[in-house]
Length: 255
Ligand code: MN
Image 1 (tube, rainbow, N blue to C red):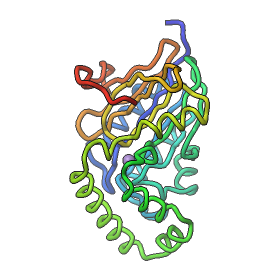
Image 2 (image 1 turned 120 degrees about the vertical axis):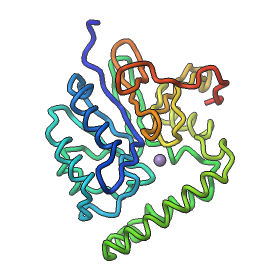
Image 3 (image 1 turned 180 degrees about the vertical axis):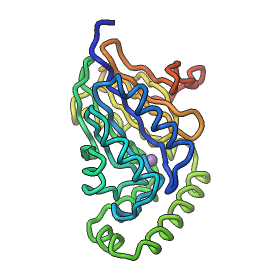
């Protein structure tokens, strides 16, 4: 009590081309908890893929209408699925596009926001792919192709990504402790909030003897949820405001 309205943070909704139950849940979230918040951050993979701001998919158009009607600031970071989301769509939705690493100041202190895929440094295949598709030349060539070809390519890449993810050991597809320590050190922060791994938790660890925390956001495929940050701390919650069921009884990774 007595603190400012919370800042809300979400990621990994993986919305489809067409409106589905996840979109409905997110629209209810915007009409519920978000109305009492001071800011909303979306840390990537809002969409399961993005083939260009001109695609006009029904789910994305509905969402742009809903987000642009909000009265609080909304900030979006790219995920590994929707890294092509551009200025035109962001403007239509009234969202600010943030860089890959976003330092923020919360009531409880400073934090860093990231999608998190670039922290999975043991996944060298993925990082090679990431380097390739983040090049402006690749993106310009891709966006210049006819829409049906772009969709076919996105579907193909999604299939490969899913298959590869299932084949890899879980520590390969998780963030690497060294990468986490490095980014916190570089930005002089002790709190990192990210998504991507779909392993919601709040981890406690140390970097150079300094106590640090890493909050991992839930994906919306099984139990949708979000992070609320207020003057009291970090609260991982389900959409009906209960504590998010994280696997707290299990040993957590070192970072
Ligand atoms: Mn991701």
